[in-house]
Length: 373
Image (cartoon, rainbow, N blue to C red):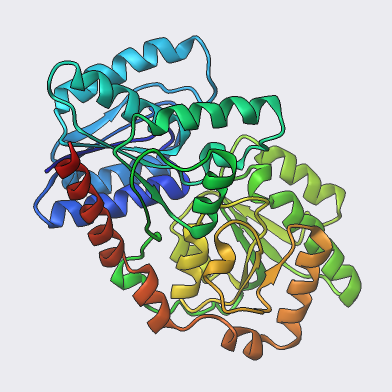
């Protein structure tokens, strides 16, 4: 098959998902390409693209794609349509809100020329995070319902995402499948804590949706309750990074919190005793799976698909509020061994969240979509 993945920003979980999927698809003998934004991502993301380039036999095409809907979409749409025509995919797989619209709309337009690819969509949260009661949410969910009619298969990365789609958008007008994100075999190797490790690690994009501000507030609360300073490392980039640096100073944490640029997750895991995922909303975050596979104990908010990873009643789960996150931090510090033992085991993780499992299930969806044309 000729498979093209279309998405906007080459950062975060969507990019990670596409890279892993492309590697597995290339190894299975398929020709794979990607189309994504050229205006986001930095040196670290550029290095990841270059590292993965051998898996993209159809090429890596980058063109400006703005995040929000606007006049620039017209030019971006024209460029993307020309790139798709050049790649001539059998499968056009859109990821996220923008990639999903482009893949399904342009896949349909290709059909007018008698060359329509199978149109696949994975939301990865995306527009599903909006409140359906707001004007913006109503517009996005009406668009999602419309685009469902231009889809051949919809993939959900968590049962939470599937249920959210049903509630906010409605029953898909095409077949759909739940396929969890998957990890590579080497990611199940243990990562040891560095001798000079901090207490807590935040790793991710520096934006409020991911909760860096909640992490800092919780760290200050936990420190005050223990009456001792707790150290933390925050790894990641983003336009809101200066805001979080200022917050750390305001909370008196500037000497206790070390900010570092984006780096490989397994390299970051060694920098602290506990990983904290303080997100306000998620679909199925890779960072949770990666940390658990590496044998790292964590505190994570009970949002999106995160609770689907943990056993019922896990002490790792907390509310997306600073006091609850602080309590999780303190609980972990009180009995680190018991906290570690409460994490899901490697056998279960491999069975449910292996990259090989993910790739096979998605290929099955592709073939079913091609047969239905």
